[in-house]
Length: 282
Ligand code: PAF
Image 1 (cartoon, helix red, strand yellow):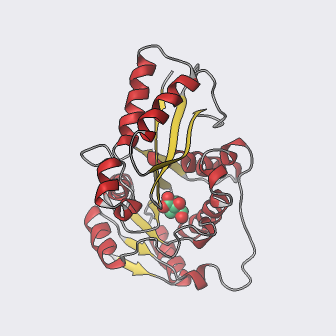
Image 2 (image 1 turned 90 degrees about the horizontal axis):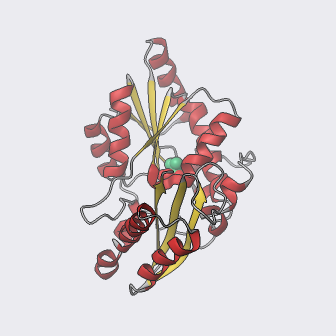
């Protein structure tokens, strides 16, 4: 497996891979890899000749007071895990090379898909995500790119950007990978204290309860949200950022679940903010 930091060397390598007629699968990450990332790398391995994983903690997608500096980093372990999952090349640029002094160009998807949910509580976050990705996609020129359902809003925003900007990249969404107790895998789980870690499965449990209510015929958005709210607030050390039920297409709030909806939540355990979601299929 190659490990590259330099943008020009990456371009050279990609050009060689292309000349040899290989397809490229790409998994963008911020590192501190876990089973969720590895499932994406394995999917890319199965569907492409050459697999690129980027590891870059992107400063543009963190707001003031967020955990950019604290975000966990472990390149050595990441390299080992990525290689074992089938990665051919890790690209991990330095921030000063990726965004050199004077860097001025940003890419932003506007409208309801970026306004609510994480877009409301993390202003500028998705602008940072689409900006870093447009640069990475231009450098890596993948045929296919792989994202996790856990970041459902990110998936919609990136898909929209790919369509709007006419990228010829297949967008693949893979299921959320969970711990045995249901907690969605996330690099941020490592910040949870033992007490918070024991409490955190309430997120998925409450989503499952909503699913059960929905299957039992409940369609009222407020009633469904209230169920999640009550279950989560009953657990100590939780602070709800949002619980929303939105249509899967435009992410607009749904008063009644009459078409397929996303139930999405963000909850803080101390200073650690976790997200999760399920889709109610209609
Ligand atoms: O999901 C992430 O880890 C990041 O938002 C991404 C897609 C790698 C962009 O920095």
